[in-house]
Image (cartoon, rainbow over all chains, first blue to last red; front, side, top):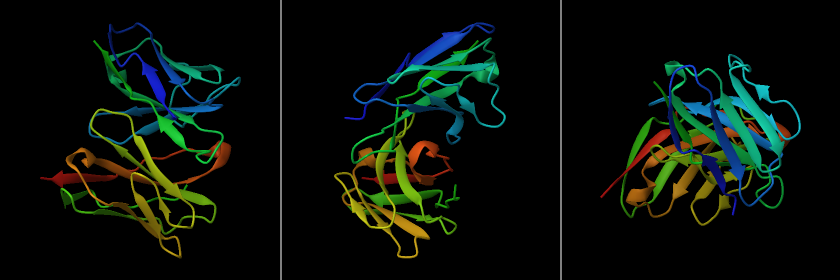
Length: 118
Length: 111
């Protein structure tokens, strides 16, 4: 149980284009999902908290107009990197918070999406 | 959220127990201790978490000191597949459950 998927697993795009990354909780409902970014040889950095049916909460220094987050259902959150540039190239990882059962409040992570902007 | 301190790296022989320490001296009474690990180029994997009592599951054991200022993650029989970066995180439960990752411990299991 507690499986989170991401799509795509990797994407290469041209500078100036937008890229959408999907995060799905496959066997549980998640009212809250989180988006992280990880640069090479660095730790995960929390970008934003995504709440189903409401606006996302962004961490300090993260541009909300550049990283659009939509959480339209209890099993799906999307992150759109708008007008991507080479400095946005990174490993993007989502997590979903289990809300019931013995593992309530535990976050489970997706496998990540490698974004390369040329 | 309380800051945690971990050694940057550790080695362990295959088949032996791996004991990974974590200091969280400023942890508050209702913050949990979570452990995750990240194998290269993958998303973090949940291992275990606890509040006050020691916890055990199929992956590991978590020993939390009585004053809750430190904890130890124990992998009872380390294998080569356990080579990963292990993160110890102090975080509140509930809707405000943000995980702030530090630099973790790179555990290298040696054959």
